[in-house]
Each structure stands twice: as structure tokens, then as C-alpha cells.
Length: 415
Image (cartoon, rainbow, N blue to C red; front, side):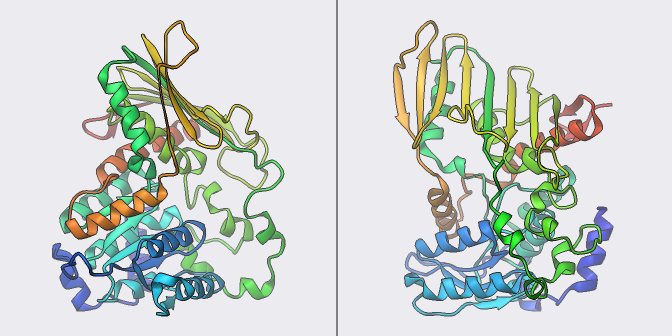
């Protein structure tokens, strides 16, 4: 939607941000944190990812001051879970439907944004202008232009913002980047990344949708969920599986590409492609608008990156990433955990191996540390914006059925 429409929505539905909160928009932290001070957090959107963020912040000693969600059942559940967590010390968080009430809290230092993608722009900008540091889930933005505005707002307010591209906090991926940089692989010409999952027998929301009742429908503020998105009648599939509808997200290319394209651009130290093409379709999931099988090819001038993603079969899913060089390849082999192998040309035996682990807790720890130190986090807004731009270009190519040419320096389409 046009920016004017988003602004009109915010103006129309705003509950207002206090003068004290607005006064923080010059970039001064809400308070100066000492080494032993607890970081106080508000959580916006307590579905799957928001619940994870709340739990991980609690595990690392943060205090949850307030939570909000358009679905009252989720608010009540999050309040109960936070209150019962040992590190919360029995303090019951406030529960809201409207995220702006969280921003009104002068006693909140940080905000975790786990809302759908179409809300990231407005929520992030409002949060940093209210003086809050932010952990915003991936994908960073819903559109390229929104991403530019978000980066600008963050830098104008000097807030600490971590984007949920959590592989950036994995020491195993940092080591992979060093191997590529060292020249051990020779001249790297191709990186292939993929995510193949089997949801053919049911996705994570199937049971909730099947058991959804009129009583639960009454607990959802559908207008608030839609927010800046086009107005539509309530649809239970759209609500629970919003990732697969163009009104609210970019489908698999942005949802999964936020991680996998990030790996490719990080390992090769690239900021963006000069040409992108994506093909695929909606072949299996009748309720999806976005493709359930899609392949992206990006030409960076010095190397090619391919990204394949589908949720219909998990065959060959044990090889999430391969970096092809003239002298050796870096192969990531996934069994119970990721194993990284440097395999020389003409051999099947690795000369160097190491293992990885889930990076989520480390990513949250990095964010909380940066809130205290005011250092830049592992996944700053500029990097996340450049990564998701490539995914957005893939969606443009897919939807317009054409090769997309991109000026990386000027951040604009060619021709």
C-alpha cells in the first residue's frame, strides 16, 4: 500500500504516544543501563516468533513488562507464561491489544517485534521514535522502499536494532566466512542454498484452523490485524497462515530467503545482485497465494547465487548450503546438527570440519549486550535491508515474469 495510506491508518487508529516518549526520539536511551540492571522488554505479537522472543529474553534475565497481540487468547497465554517464568520473579506483565500502549511505557527499554511482516515498517519506526531499542523479526521489511525508510529512521534516532537474521550470531558461519575469505576454496563462483521441508501432511497451523470456533473468532481484532493492509472480510486461513498471502508477506522467498540469502551474501561479502530471476508456482497448497515451490538465481557479477525452497518434500534437505570454489568446496551437511566440511577438488574426504548449532539464543544475547554497550549488533538494519532486497527482487521477477536488473549502488531498478 502507499505510504500515505499507512500514515492515514496510524493517524486514524492511534491511541497516542506520550510527550515523554516522543521526547526520546532524539536518540537518547530511555535510561542508562548499569552492568547489573535488568533490561525491561515489551513484546509486540506473541504468536510463534513473539513467544520465542519472550521466552529467550526471559531465559537471559530480561524482564517482560508488557505484551500485546490482536488475539486475546495469545495475550492471556503470554502473560501467564511470563509470570510463571523463574526469572520474572512473579511480576505479571501488562497485556494489550494495541502496540502503541507498549510504546507509551516509560519503563520499557526494548521492544521485540514478532508481528506479521506488513506491520514491521510502522511498528519499528514508531518504536525507535519512542526511544526504544528493538529486536525485529525477519524478514526486515515487506517492500524495498519500506526497508529504506526503516533504515533511515533507525539511524536518525540512533537506536540499537537487531534484525532476526540469527545466523549472523553463529560462530560456525563466521568460521565459514573466514575460510572463504582465506582463499582455501580458490575462486568462488557459485553458492547454492536451499530449504526443503515436508508440510504435505499438514502445516503447523492445521490443528488450530480445524478447531477454530466462533468464540475464538470473537477474541481477534481483525481490523487491527489488517492495519495498513487492504481491507478484507475475516478469513481464518489468512489469519493463521498470513505468510503465504501477498497482502501481509512475501512468501517463501522472503520468509526463508531472509536466512539463506543472508548466508550467501555474507560468505562472499556481497551487498546485492545486479540481476535476479525467479521461477516456480503454487502447485500443492490450494490456500496459498504465494508459490510453494520457487527457485531464485542471482547474478552478482563476480559469482552466482541460487536459492531453492519448497515445503512439499524434504528429500535432499540434508545439504542446506554448498560453496563451490575452483580448488575446493565448502559443504554443509545437516543430520542432527550442521557439519561444515572443506572438501578439496578431486577428493571426497574433507580436510577440515567443524559443527554448528542453533544460533537463536546467541542472537538474543548479542542484542541484549548491545543494548547495554551501545555497540552495533550482529545483524544491523543496513545488512538485513540489503539481504531482503534480493528476496524482494526475486518476488518482483516471479510476479512480473521477467528478469530484474538492479543498480546496487543507487538501490533502484535498471530500465
